[in-house]
Length: 164
Image (tube, rainbow, N blue to C red; front, top):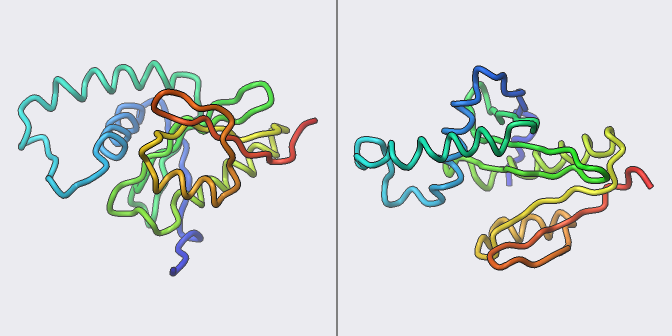
């Protein structure tokens, strides 16, 4: 696989960009497969779905660090982190279906691990849907292990060697 990681950049989301962050999160995360086509024009009820999601997202991500992931000035994903006592929690990873499997998620995990060590955190944690097998495989390869099982998801954890 050709590595393009050196071309990725993380750009912090300003408060003026929150709407765009939440909209892209909706489009990248909620729509996992573009084969059926998904556009505003094709679904007149789109606005009744996306507006509540964007409002909920703004509340959910309120105190989190939010980033756009760019590749040559093109936003290819969104990423959010939350600081907890001994943990840096990865609360959101959403990558455009057109840019998956080129190393974006690995780049984000590397960044999160480095930031966790810088903040003197001991662990990275995240939640992943049980049926999201590509994500589960990636996280296991990256060294995450199952901390807890929920009804539809797993809480995964990785030791990053921070605070004792």
